[in-house]
Length: 351
Image (cartoon, rainbow, N blue to C red; front, top):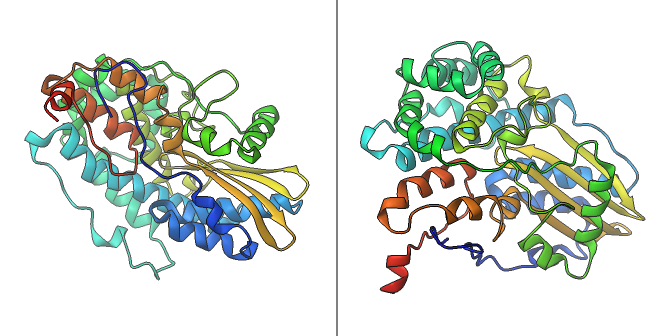
């Protein structure tokens, strides 16, 4: 990534065509194989791949209650990881408020009984300092004005981090270009066509909607009435807290995240799932009981398009050390979920 440089200013070293490894493999094994390869959000990959296969076979079934609860639990925990571990380091290192969540929120992998009550209690005490439902109602009612008021008057580590980064985050304006698939048949079939084409590798490296590049994240949730109105980094930071607040509600959070699936051709299916970083998409083509082809389109592919949302925000950051705070704020919100290097103009000149 090259802050202060005109777009394209993001270069990816990820090799294309990883999905070719799964061609010819039994379709029933694909969800688990993808979950192992994409382990950071393995639960979401497993769910999405399974539904893409079912759609290819002509069946589009909703998540079971157990699957929806697991998705809620895992997505909430991922937001907690980012907010409690990454934000203190990137947004306010001088505050020294980095604090590990209790082990009860991260049980062993073989523990299949998540404690949503424990998660809710921890979030309400350590993040919001109030009931999560009340926090989300106020944010959705008053938006960033409430976020500023809350951050200034609350002593939790997260509120202190937001208060310390408010001025810079409010100055980083980012035009809203939400990725939409839910209830948009034309967008679904267009995306499936592009993922099945011979140039699919190039498309995955720089995906676009029919009207251009798009972004996806907690601020583009289908059920969020504020979706599409977050026009600066400050609002997007608030949306990640809103996501945690919604997911922390045991009697509501399982219905907050949307997913879908559609049969897009003979033995072909497309499925999508809202995850912590945004919308995850899988396309699968079956060859009998085997995988004929498949593609994965992750939130990072949209957000870190070489000429997309993050790239355009980085272009306006001052080159050199003076722009690093703004760059770190952008990356903390959009979270590439991959190892990355930030190269300033000065560093490039001396390389």
